Amino acid sequence: MQYIIRKATEQDLTKAREIYGIARNFMRDNGNLTQWGKGDEPENLTEDDIRQGNLYALTDNAGEIHAVFVFMIGEDPTYLKIEQGNWISAEPYGVVHRVASDGSVHGVLGRIMDYCKGQMPHLRIDTHEDNKVMQHVIEKCGFVRCGIIYVSDGTPRIAYECR
Image (cartoon, rainbow, N blue to C red; front, side):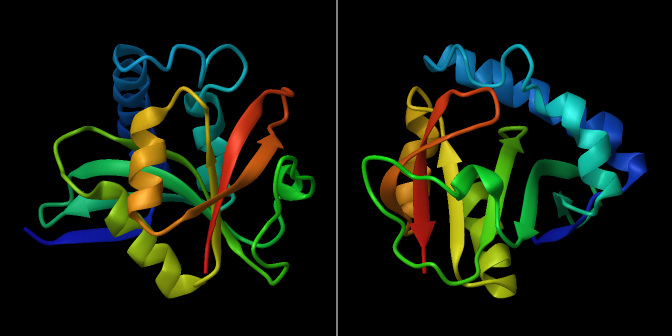
């Protein structure tokens, strides 16, 4: 099966929100009880992400969406300050946020990272300390743990970088 990554459109809004719900349940079932909780639900950000051209969808040949994620090139305010470590490079970078899958396709993060590296080879991503599954696949994709950053609600995230 071939998979395509494309920018999400307003027509994808319902499916994107559904996928975020599936991902949240998966995280809860795997010990990550607080990420994407009150105030930082991706579903509430999805419409703006689409409008800003930052939400992407991974689709199969038939156009069915199996994963969504945010990808942006440029400085991310949450990455300006890092504790308990350092970034590998201060060069321009792309960021990947709010990765979610419906669980039906294997190797989703690898496909996403291959796409993003094709746009900008220097990438950063972060995840919650309880998101062990994501930490594993991030490192499997060649990212190095760099330290701790804090998201807008003040909670810490493990920060990763890949060059």
